[in-house]
Length: 111
Length: 398
Image 1 (spheres, each protein chain N blue to C red):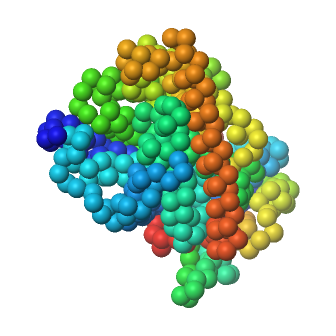
Image 2: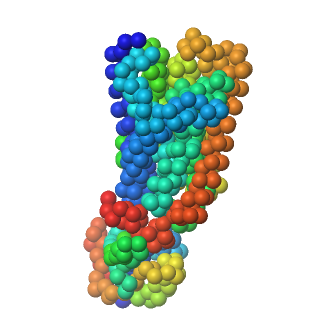
Image 3: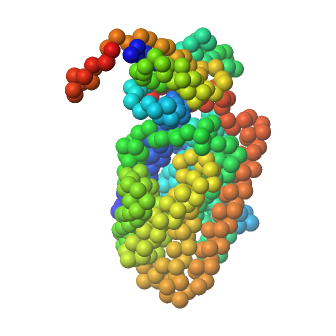
């Protein structure tokens, strides 16, 4: 079985929706990290009378899940739909190949 | 009269105790918002304290305690504290100390109103609003109850500010929330408190300061002060346990519920502290905890974003306290019999006093908020709200 890791960087306030969408796809295991980052717009610029202030790192949530290649498109679509607001800053999804996966308790391997 | 050192020392101490409550409100509220608005929430209370302190000595005190104009507001005889002496007056303490003591009350009232602005207010507009509110809402209400205005003549009892501070600020927060609108995303996803221990710490400062608030309002170091001190503590304790039990019944015994209940108990005993006994304070506090908990659930069910529940706890707790004062007052304690001693008139007087303060505070706040919103805009832009007020309004990160 070919495995993939999905790394999804999303808006923190959409996290609960994405989690639910992943559950609906039968995925309960995940690793979640609070992260900061910026994309094409280099953050958000705020306009003031005295000029602009650039807030260049915006808080995001990074979700990592490992799934079989066959499920990848379906899961990616679920994340996109549940994380989307339509505004700039909705995030990014990266798909990486995974060589091996080992369960710590049993030593059971998948690859 | 010569200076009474005991009374003067206690009032000096009480003033400092009550001062600590305003940052206490800031920390209480600060723990309840999301991290990106933590500094903003605490800063609002400090800003209020500084602003109202200045307004108070310039003209606020005079509007509240100056010579009566039509039972509605004081005149400007004491503007700039002219004629306010540091020599002991009739009461045995210096009038300038009374100004300081009343000033810290004015500050905390406006700080409580920040609940309705949480996580979305534009700082510059807030400063204008705060000055207008303390001048046009707080000062008249203080005059009505304590400065020789119509409510005090009429016989409505408010020992330490249940009507003036809590009903007014609670219903003002509700009006503000209705004008400024919901936080973006409210009701779509959960906005969890980012730091509950900070809120518990804020509650500790409030509970501590409240001894000055209520026992200090005896304006003397005497038995009434001691009774007020005792019933204040007992009502807070009863409120804490009542809300804790109610939240336990519905799920887990929440620490946040417990301290909210303590504040509810403190609010409800505020108008009553100089008039009721310890037995009554248990009932007042416990019922306050349940009423305010119910009010909070109602507020959530209605989808109202009065974000930090000043209305539920201070507004509704204050109303209950005003009614309870009319019910449980005992002549042997404060000289006024209430409903339990067969005096219906006291209950009616208190009800009228409380409801008129409620309507006045709500309506005038609504008008002020709409005016400031139309001219300056009460709210930050969508992007500023998204990144949070700490960065967008203060350029700082918690």
